[in-house]
Structures are given as structure tokens and as C-alpha cells.
Amino acid sequence: MTNIYSNIIKVNNKNIARSIKYLKKNETVAVPTETVYGLAGNAYSDDAIRKIFKLKNRPTINPLIIHYYSVDDLAKDAELNKKFFILFKKFCPGPITFILKKKSSSRVSNIANAKLDTIAVRFPKNKDIRKILKKLNFPLAMPSANKSSSISPVCAKDVAEEFKNKLKIILDGGKCKIGIESTVVDLTQNINILRPGFISKDKISKILNSKIFSNKSLKTIKAPGSLKKHYSPGIPMKLNQTKVFNNCAFIIFGKKYIETKNTFNLSKNSNLNEAARNLYKIFRKIKGKQYKKIYVVKIPNKGVGIAINDRLKHAAN
Ligand code: AMP
Ligand code: MG
Image (cartoon, rainbow, N blue to C red; front, top):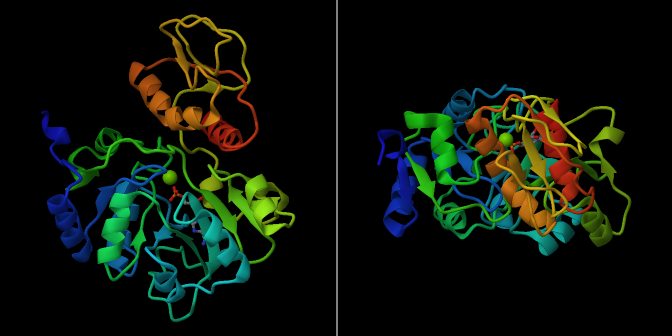
């Protein structure tokens, strides 16, 4: 095993205990979740939060999502409302993040929520991160475990590629089941999708039985995650293409296209969930092969396809 991967350790009771010990010392640990791998730190500690921003080289105006084990834990830090409880009951734990009013008595570091009067909160479903959260008496701030504006990691090796030996612990829980970031929904005023994800706007609207917005309809964009260049392999990318070019990567979907060494199929079976799971893996593969350009076919804009198209648009920007 090469030295740069020596910080990857398998999920087991001993290594979970080691991670917990580390988090209690306000150190950062990379951990699996069902969406993408996270870079976790004590959300109540300015010290831990500063380490996360520094490691990621993340702009301090871009707030972090705070991860909780239970509603009881969250109630200490945020004002909960009726819509929150409806969505919580239906989708949590799971890939959905809520923007709520931060309580004035909350101990969440102001640096973590970029000094806003709101916080972004999530209850991850992955059993390993839940084991960790259960044993801590503080929530975890946890952005994706990649350098700011780079590709989100969907396995432990991706994290190691991003941070080399800068991280002491990368807890290896296998591949992420969903592979794309959580849906971010603002519940503070009008219900508003700030970032599309695995759980669609339609599903949320149906459960709440009300009209909801998506960020473009708002004047003030609240999620700097909608900062333009993001999720990027750092190679010029063109969307809605139909033709392959020599020496360029071609990201395809379904069985319509002839496969060559330059094609990368998101899902042969035209399955959007599978496409979401493969998206960042394919970005990373293409980045490693140093293509000059990436062409992408049109992806159906429904269900999780909306989130895939959102990430593609950001990457192409
Ligand atoms: P990441 O940590 O990379 O998954 O991104 C987290 C996303 O949540 C970003 O788009 C943030 O801008 C967004 N976010 C976090 N906290 C808030 C907040 N208080 N209000 C609005 N958006 C937020
Ligand atoms: Mg991220």
C-alpha cells in the first residue's frame, strides 16, 4: 500500500472509537455518508470549524451543514416548525438538509454558519456516521470531503486523492449509496429548494401539499453552494451534445451511443439513480486521464436527473 493511502482505515468498532476520540479533541475526520464523504468536526468548536475551512480552502462565506443524530439534539440549536416535522417524518434520516432559524442559545459555532441567523441541518442515514453521532454530545459540521470547488468524493480513496496525507483519519465505509449531495430546502419563509438533490422538489411539494420555489425565483440566493464553479473536474465541459470528437471524453446515458475508450456511460439502463451514483466517479476518472474537453449528452430533467443536471451545469460553468 502506498503511503498516501495509509490514513484510510476500515469501519469497525475500534476505528469508530478512534474517530470519536479524535473528534472530541476537535480534530477533523473524513467519514462516509449515504450522499458523499464528509469532512467532520465538532460543530460547537470554533477551532474544529476553522480546521475544516482551512483544509478545504473554502470561502468563509459558504456555511456548513450541521449533522445530528436526533430531533432532541437539534431542538437545542434550531427553531423547529410544522413543515420541518412533516418532512422529517417522511424523509429522515436521509439525504435532505433543512435551513432553519438558529436559536440564540445555540452553541453551534458562528463560523460554521457564516454568521447567518439560520443553520443548515441534516440527519444522515449511513449507519456508521449514525453510530458516531449517537456517541457524541455535540453535532458534526460536515461539508463534502474535497477541496473547495473540486469533485465530491464517493469513496475513501477519492478523499485521499483530495487531501493526500493532510488528514489523519479517513474512515472507509465503502461506496456512497446515493453519490450526490443532499437536497437543501429552506423552511424559514417560503419553502424554497436552494440545491436540488436525490429527494425531488415534486416529492417535497406533494408531502407538504403546497407550492414550493427553487432558488432562481428568489432575489437573494442563500446557498453559496450555488457559487458558480463547483463540483468541477477542471476541464471545459459542453452539455446537451450528440456527437463524439476525437481525444475528448464523452459522457453518455443509455444504450443509444456506440461505446469507445472515450465514452463514459452514467447508466446503460437509463437509470437516473445509477447515473447519480456514477457521476462523480466518472468526473474523477476523466480528470485522471487529462482529456482536453468533455462532451455530455442530454440527461432527462426529472427526479434525481434535475440534481444531475444542476451539478453538470455548475461543472460546465
Ligand atoms: P456542502 O457543504 O458542500 O454540501 O454545501 C452545503 C450547502 O448548504 C451549500 O450550498 C451552503 O451554501 C448551504 N448552506 C449551509 N448553511 C446554509 C444556510 N444557513 N443558509 C443557506 N444555505 C446554507
Ligand atoms: Mg461540497
